[in-house]
Image 1 (cartoon, helix red, strand yellow):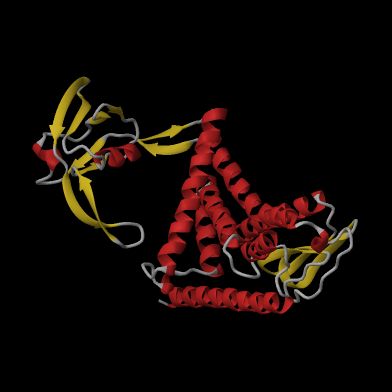
Image 2 (image 1 turned 135 degrees about the vertical axis):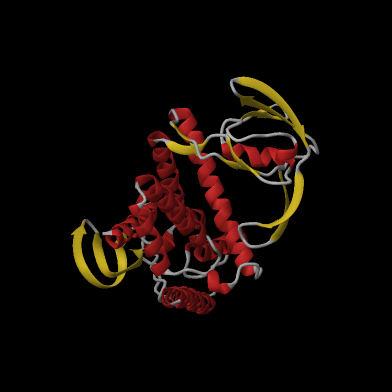
Length: 350
Protein backbone atom coordinates (compact mmCIF):
# COMPACT_ATOMS: atom_id res chain seq x y z
CA UNK A 1 0.00 0.00 0.00
CA UNK A 2 2.85 2.38 0.88
CA UNK A 3 4.44 1.92 -2.56
CA UNK A 4 1.12 2.70 -4.27
CA UNK A 5 0.81 5.88 -2.20
CA UNK A 6 4.39 6.83 -3.12
CA UNK A 7 3.74 6.34 -6.84
CA UNK A 8 0.51 8.33 -6.54
CA UNK A 9 2.40 11.17 -4.79
CA UNK A 10 5.04 11.25 -7.55
CA UNK A 11 2.36 11.20 -10.25
CA UNK A 12 0.49 14.11 -8.62
CA UNK A 13 3.68 16.19 -8.33
CA UNK A 14 4.60 15.49 -11.96
CA UNK A 15 1.04 16.32 -13.04
CA UNK A 16 1.18 19.69 -11.26
CA UNK A 17 4.57 20.49 -12.81
CA UNK A 18 3.40 19.72 -16.33
CA UNK A 19 0.06 21.44 -15.71
CA UNK A 20 2.03 24.61 -15.00
CA UNK A 21 3.72 24.39 -18.41
CA UNK A 22 0.43 23.45 -20.09
CA UNK A 23 -1.57 26.32 -18.56
CA UNK A 24 0.98 29.01 -19.44
CA UNK A 25 1.45 27.59 -22.95
CA UNK A 26 -2.29 27.69 -23.59
CA UNK A 27 -2.44 31.22 -22.10
CA UNK A 28 -0.02 32.37 -24.82
CA UNK A 29 -1.85 30.42 -27.52
CA UNK A 30 0.67 27.59 -27.91
CA UNK A 31 -0.76 24.27 -29.06
CA UNK A 32 0.07 21.41 -26.69
CA UNK A 33 0.17 18.16 -28.65
CA UNK A 34 0.85 15.70 -25.80
CA UNK A 35 0.47 15.84 -22.01
CA UNK A 36 2.08 12.73 -20.56
CA UNK A 37 2.53 11.43 -17.02
CA UNK A 38 5.39 8.95 -17.25
CA UNK A 39 7.54 7.77 -20.15
CA UNK A 40 7.60 4.77 -22.45
CA UNK A 41 4.66 2.67 -23.55
CA UNK A 42 1.29 4.40 -23.30
CA UNK A 43 -1.08 2.64 -20.90
CA UNK A 44 -4.02 5.03 -21.23
CA UNK A 45 -4.66 7.89 -23.60
CA UNK A 46 -7.53 10.25 -24.36
CA UNK A 47 -7.68 13.22 -26.68
CA UNK A 48 -9.29 16.42 -25.46
CA UNK A 49 -9.24 19.18 -28.07
CA UNK A 50 -5.76 19.38 -29.63
CA UNK A 51 -4.02 17.57 -26.76
CA UNK A 52 -3.47 13.85 -26.29
CA UNK A 53 -3.49 13.14 -22.54
CA UNK A 54 -1.57 9.97 -21.70
CA UNK A 55 -0.52 7.80 -18.77
CA UNK A 56 2.69 5.93 -19.60
CA UNK A 57 4.39 2.86 -18.19
CA UNK A 58 7.48 4.35 -16.45
CA UNK A 59 6.39 6.81 -13.71
CA UNK A 60 9.76 8.59 -13.52
CA UNK A 61 8.67 11.94 -14.86
CA UNK A 62 6.42 13.43 -17.48
CA UNK A 63 6.31 15.99 -20.25
CA UNK A 64 4.17 18.29 -22.33
CA UNK A 65 5.03 18.32 -26.03
CA UNK A 66 4.32 21.74 -27.47
CA UNK A 67 4.09 22.41 -31.17
CA UNK A 68 7.54 23.37 -32.44
CA UNK A 69 9.45 22.03 -29.43
CA UNK A 70 11.20 18.66 -29.27
CA UNK A 71 13.92 17.97 -26.67
CA UNK A 72 15.04 14.86 -28.53
CA UNK A 73 15.48 16.80 -31.77
CA UNK A 74 15.85 20.59 -31.30
CA UNK A 75 16.00 21.02 -35.09
CA UNK A 76 12.26 20.31 -35.36
CA UNK A 77 11.06 23.89 -35.38
CA UNK A 78 7.73 25.42 -36.41
CA UNK A 79 6.97 29.12 -36.74
CA UNK A 80 3.20 28.80 -37.04
CA UNK A 81 1.22 31.21 -34.87
CA UNK A 82 0.29 28.44 -32.42
CA UNK A 83 3.85 27.08 -32.07
CA UNK A 84 6.24 27.49 -29.15
CA UNK A 85 8.95 28.94 -31.42
CA UNK A 86 6.74 31.76 -32.67
CA UNK A 87 6.48 33.25 -29.20
CA UNK A 88 8.83 35.91 -27.89
CA UNK A 89 11.69 34.79 -25.63
CA UNK A 90 10.09 36.30 -22.51
CA UNK A 91 6.87 34.40 -23.22
CA UNK A 92 8.80 31.13 -23.65
CA UNK A 93 10.65 31.82 -20.38
CA UNK A 94 7.33 32.25 -18.57
CA UNK A 95 6.08 28.97 -20.06
CA UNK A 96 9.25 27.26 -18.81
CA UNK A 97 9.10 28.88 -15.36
CA UNK A 98 5.47 27.84 -14.91
CA UNK A 99 6.41 24.19 -14.27
CA UNK A 100 8.80 24.81 -11.35
CA UNK A 101 6.45 27.55 -10.07
CA UNK A 102 3.66 24.95 -9.91
CA UNK A 103 5.90 22.76 -7.74
CA UNK A 104 6.62 25.63 -5.34
CA UNK A 105 2.90 26.47 -5.28
CA UNK A 106 2.08 22.82 -4.53
CA UNK A 107 4.53 22.82 -1.60
CA UNK A 108 3.07 26.10 -0.35
CA UNK A 109 -0.46 24.66 -0.43
CA UNK A 110 0.68 21.51 1.42
CA UNK A 111 2.37 23.57 4.14
CA UNK A 112 -0.78 25.71 4.43
CA UNK A 113 -2.85 22.52 4.80
CA UNK A 114 -0.44 21.33 7.53
CA UNK A 115 -0.81 24.67 9.33
CA UNK A 116 -4.60 24.30 9.24
CA UNK A 117 -4.50 20.67 10.43
CA UNK A 118 -2.19 21.52 13.33
CA UNK A 119 1.60 21.42 13.68
CA UNK A 120 2.96 19.33 16.59
CA UNK A 121 5.62 21.20 18.58
CA UNK A 122 7.71 20.44 21.66
CA UNK A 123 7.17 22.78 24.59
CA UNK A 124 10.15 24.58 26.12
CA UNK A 125 10.27 22.33 29.18
CA UNK A 126 13.51 20.86 30.54
CA UNK A 127 13.81 17.08 30.55
CA UNK A 128 17.36 16.13 31.47
CA UNK A 129 20.27 18.28 32.62
CA UNK A 130 23.73 17.04 31.57
CA UNK A 131 26.54 16.52 34.06
CA UNK A 132 29.14 19.30 34.32
CA UNK A 133 26.99 21.52 32.10
CA UNK A 134 26.30 25.26 32.42
CA UNK A 135 22.65 24.39 33.09
CA UNK A 136 23.55 22.14 36.03
CA UNK A 137 25.90 24.76 37.51
CA UNK A 138 23.09 27.32 37.23
CA UNK A 139 20.72 24.92 39.04
CA UNK A 140 18.31 24.28 36.17
CA UNK A 141 16.08 21.31 37.01
CA UNK A 142 13.87 18.77 35.31
CA UNK A 143 10.39 20.11 34.45
CA UNK A 144 11.54 23.76 34.55
CA UNK A 145 9.61 25.72 31.92
CA UNK A 146 11.66 28.31 30.02
CA UNK A 147 9.69 31.51 29.45
CA UNK A 148 12.38 33.97 28.31
CA UNK A 149 15.99 34.04 27.13
CA UNK A 150 17.63 37.48 27.21
CA UNK A 151 14.23 39.16 27.17
CA UNK A 152 12.94 37.14 24.19
CA UNK A 153 9.73 35.20 24.80
CA UNK A 154 10.07 31.42 24.43
CA UNK A 155 7.21 28.98 23.99
CA UNK A 156 8.54 26.08 21.93
CA UNK A 157 11.76 24.05 22.17
CA UNK A 158 12.82 24.95 18.61
CA UNK A 159 13.17 28.61 19.71
CA UNK A 160 15.82 27.90 22.34
CA UNK A 161 18.89 27.01 20.25
CA UNK A 162 18.87 30.17 18.05
CA UNK A 163 18.71 32.34 21.18
CA UNK A 164 21.51 30.41 22.91
CA UNK A 165 23.68 30.83 19.80
CA UNK A 166 23.11 34.57 19.60
CA UNK A 167 25.77 37.23 20.14
CA UNK A 168 25.37 37.49 23.91
CA UNK A 169 28.00 35.76 26.04
CA UNK A 170 25.79 35.57 29.14
CA UNK A 171 22.26 34.23 29.07
CA UNK A 172 19.50 35.40 31.38
CA UNK A 173 16.71 32.84 31.60
CA UNK A 174 13.31 33.34 33.15
CA UNK A 175 11.81 29.99 34.12
CA UNK A 176 8.73 28.67 35.88
CA UNK A 177 9.41 26.25 38.75
CA UNK A 178 6.70 25.14 41.16
CA UNK A 179 4.44 27.92 39.82
CA UNK A 180 7.06 30.56 40.68
CA UNK A 181 9.18 32.73 38.37
CA UNK A 182 12.92 32.22 38.77
CA UNK A 183 15.75 34.23 37.15
CA UNK A 184 18.87 32.31 36.13
CA UNK A 185 22.10 33.66 34.61
CA UNK A 186 24.57 31.30 32.92
CA UNK A 187 27.36 31.23 30.34
CA UNK A 188 26.86 28.71 27.50
CA UNK A 189 29.64 26.30 26.57
CA UNK A 190 31.04 26.23 23.01
CA UNK A 191 31.50 22.76 21.52
CA UNK A 192 32.59 21.35 18.17
CA UNK A 193 29.78 19.62 16.33
CA UNK A 194 28.68 18.66 12.83
CA UNK A 195 25.97 20.31 10.80
CA UNK A 196 23.40 18.61 8.59
CA UNK A 197 26.02 18.12 5.85
CA UNK A 198 28.70 16.65 8.12
CA UNK A 199 30.81 19.84 8.24
CA UNK A 200 32.55 20.67 11.52
CA UNK A 201 31.04 23.70 13.21
CA UNK A 202 31.12 25.40 16.59
CA UNK A 203 27.92 25.93 18.51
CA UNK A 204 26.87 26.93 22.00
CA UNK A 205 25.03 24.63 24.38
CA UNK A 206 23.80 24.85 27.96
CA UNK A 207 23.35 21.09 28.44
CA UNK A 208 19.62 20.43 28.49
CA UNK A 209 17.26 18.19 26.53
CA UNK A 210 13.47 18.44 26.18
CA UNK A 211 11.01 16.74 28.50
CA UNK A 212 8.97 15.66 25.49
CA UNK A 213 5.72 17.43 26.29
CA UNK A 214 3.99 18.38 23.04
CA UNK A 215 1.25 20.67 21.92
CA UNK A 216 -0.49 21.10 18.59
CA UNK A 217 -0.40 24.58 17.10
CA UNK A 218 -3.30 25.52 14.83
CA UNK A 219 -2.77 28.51 12.53
CA UNK A 220 -5.42 30.91 11.29
CA UNK A 221 -5.62 32.16 7.71
CA UNK A 222 -2.95 34.89 7.88
CA UNK A 223 -0.59 33.00 10.21
CA UNK A 224 -1.08 29.89 8.10
CA UNK A 225 -0.05 31.75 4.94
CA UNK A 226 3.02 33.13 6.73
CA UNK A 227 3.91 29.63 8.00
CA UNK A 228 3.51 28.15 4.50
CA UNK A 229 5.68 30.88 2.97
CA UNK A 230 8.44 30.46 5.56
CA UNK A 231 8.46 26.65 5.30
CA UNK A 232 8.59 26.81 1.48
CA UNK A 233 11.55 29.18 1.76
CA UNK A 234 13.31 26.90 4.26
CA UNK A 235 12.79 23.83 2.08
CA UNK A 236 14.06 25.68 -1.02
CA UNK A 237 17.17 26.89 0.81
CA UNK A 238 17.83 23.36 2.10
CA UNK A 239 17.72 21.91 -1.43
CA UNK A 240 19.96 24.68 -2.83
CA UNK A 241 22.48 24.18 0.02
CA UNK A 242 22.42 20.41 -0.54
CA UNK A 243 23.24 20.88 -4.22
CA UNK A 244 26.01 23.33 -3.36
CA UNK A 245 27.55 20.89 -0.84
CA UNK A 246 27.27 18.04 -3.36
CA UNK A 247 29.00 20.02 -6.11
CA UNK A 248 31.72 21.24 -3.74
CA UNK A 249 32.42 17.70 -2.54
CA UNK A 250 31.32 18.27 1.07
CA UNK A 251 28.56 15.69 0.54
CA UNK A 252 29.79 12.52 -1.17
CA UNK A 253 28.27 11.14 -4.38
CA UNK A 254 27.26 8.05 -2.38
CA UNK A 255 24.63 10.20 -0.64
CA UNK A 256 22.72 10.78 -3.90
CA UNK A 257 19.40 8.93 -3.76
CA UNK A 258 17.33 7.68 -6.68
CA UNK A 259 13.75 6.76 -7.37
CA UNK A 260 13.89 3.74 -5.02
CA UNK A 261 14.88 5.96 -2.09
CA UNK A 262 12.14 8.47 -2.92
CA UNK A 263 9.50 5.73 -3.13
CA UNK A 264 10.79 4.04 0.03
CA UNK A 265 10.86 7.21 2.16
CA UNK A 266 7.49 8.38 0.81
CA UNK A 267 5.99 4.98 1.67
CA UNK A 268 7.41 5.23 5.20
CA UNK A 269 6.04 8.75 5.56
CA UNK A 270 2.59 7.50 4.50
CA UNK A 271 2.68 4.94 7.32
CA UNK A 272 3.58 7.68 9.82
CA UNK A 273 0.41 9.64 9.14
CA UNK A 274 -0.98 12.33 6.87
CA UNK A 275 1.15 15.13 8.37
CA UNK A 276 4.42 13.28 7.74
CA UNK A 277 3.28 12.45 4.20
CA UNK A 278 2.37 16.10 3.53
CA UNK A 279 5.72 17.32 4.93
CA UNK A 280 7.73 14.94 2.76
CA UNK A 281 5.58 15.52 -0.34
CA UNK A 282 6.13 19.27 0.04
CA UNK A 283 9.89 18.71 0.27
CA UNK A 284 9.91 16.55 -2.88
CA UNK A 285 7.82 19.17 -4.68
CA UNK A 286 10.32 21.90 -3.80
CA UNK A 287 13.11 19.53 -4.86
CA UNK A 288 11.52 19.11 -8.30
CA UNK A 289 11.09 22.87 -8.63
CA UNK A 290 14.70 23.66 -7.75
CA UNK A 291 16.24 20.85 -9.82
CA UNK A 292 14.26 21.81 -12.92
CA UNK A 293 15.66 25.34 -12.70
CA UNK A 294 19.26 24.12 -12.96
CA UNK A 295 20.91 25.45 -16.15
CA UNK A 296 21.22 21.97 -17.66
CA UNK A 297 20.05 21.52 -21.26
CA UNK A 298 17.01 19.19 -21.38
CA UNK A 299 15.75 20.75 -18.11
CA UNK A 300 13.61 23.88 -17.88
CA UNK A 301 16.62 25.83 -16.63
CA UNK A 302 18.61 24.90 -19.74
CA UNK A 303 15.84 26.11 -22.06
CA UNK A 304 15.56 29.32 -20.03
CA UNK A 305 19.30 29.79 -20.56
CA UNK A 306 18.88 29.50 -24.36
CA UNK A 307 16.01 32.01 -24.34
CA UNK A 308 17.93 34.45 -22.15
CA UNK A 309 20.76 34.26 -24.69
CA UNK A 310 18.27 35.16 -27.43
CA UNK A 311 16.89 38.06 -25.38
CA UNK A 312 20.35 39.49 -24.71
CA UNK A 313 21.86 39.02 -28.18
CA UNK A 314 18.80 39.20 -30.43
CA UNK A 315 19.96 35.94 -32.05
CA UNK A 316 18.74 32.39 -31.60
CA UNK A 317 21.29 29.86 -30.38
CA UNK A 318 22.98 27.77 -33.05
CA UNK A 319 20.85 24.66 -33.77
CA UNK A 320 23.82 22.28 -33.80
CA UNK A 321 25.16 23.66 -30.53
CA UNK A 322 21.70 23.44 -28.99
CA UNK A 323 21.36 19.82 -30.13
CA UNK A 324 24.78 18.82 -28.77
CA UNK A 325 24.19 20.61 -25.47
CA UNK A 326 20.75 19.00 -25.15
CA UNK A 327 22.24 15.55 -25.77
CA UNK A 328 24.93 16.33 -23.20
CA UNK A 329 22.19 17.33 -20.77
CA UNK A 330 20.39 14.02 -21.30
CA UNK A 331 23.64 12.14 -20.74
CA UNK A 332 24.24 14.08 -17.51
CA UNK A 333 20.68 13.44 -16.28
CA UNK A 334 20.94 9.77 -17.21
CA UNK A 335 24.23 9.50 -15.32
CA UNK A 336 22.70 11.11 -12.22
CA UNK A 337 19.73 8.74 -12.40
CA UNK A 338 22.07 5.77 -12.76
CA UNK A 339 24.17 6.98 -9.81
CA UNK A 340 21.03 7.34 -7.67
CA UNK A 341 19.84 3.87 -8.68
CA UNK A 342 23.30 2.38 -7.98
CA UNK A 343 23.33 3.97 -4.50
CA UNK A 344 19.77 2.77 -3.86
CA UNK A 345 20.71 -0.83 -4.72
CA UNK A 346 23.82 -0.60 -2.53
CA UNK A 347 21.71 0.59 0.38
CA UNK A 348 19.20 -2.21 -0.15
CA UNK A 349 21.98 -4.82 -0.23
CA UNK A 350 23.88 -3.39 2.71
